Image (cartoon, rainbow, N blue to C red; front, side, top):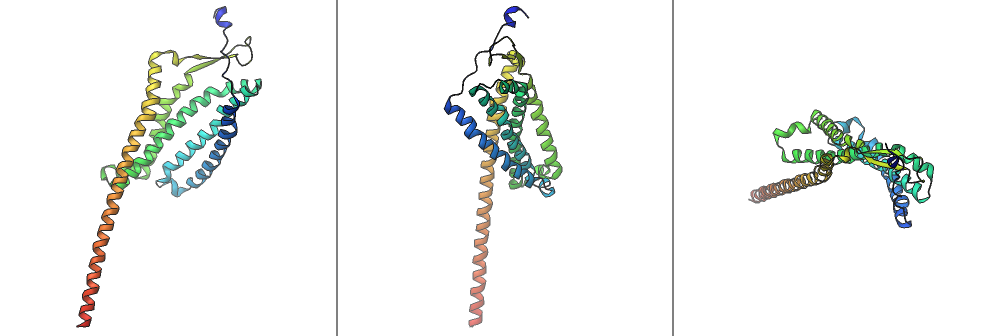
Length: 253
């Protein structure tokens, strides 16, 4: 490392104005706290053995992921806002000791939550469509294996984000300019493209399209089934009315 690199300092952190600070700390933080509490309650409800062997199985994972998103918000956003807005050096140093771990975990949680929601929707689709070839997915073993595969794939795809950047501390730099985020994997154009397509297509566009298609089919099949049920009930009531009418006529004769 040459002298120029040794003296390189980070650009001054983007400051928090009053509005942005209020949004992050006074609005975002209470919402994250409430989200943690309510998802914790859902977690307790779904942890029962009956829920583990029912369609609520995927809701258990969704509650876990949602709670993690809320929990990660506070050390990731709230701590950063407090450190920069109030110029607290100790918080600034503390934030940089764990930020890459939280960054990686947040990527994994977001990816896993999206596809766990897709699994839950797909299960409703299988149940409503009554397709025997897909019935394995709504069994206890099917749910467990599907959830494990989803978690493993999410971990494989998102774990590399831990190595996106390397944090370097420059002791000779001014406060709040003493930490550099040096690209590691992000320095490779191929990985940058991979990360972009992973975020935009695999994590956002593809799940959105699949969820939309499955929900449209579910609504259509549910409406069709309800219409058939009401239609059959109508004929049943008409037949029942005819029987009563014939019985009255027989009684009168």
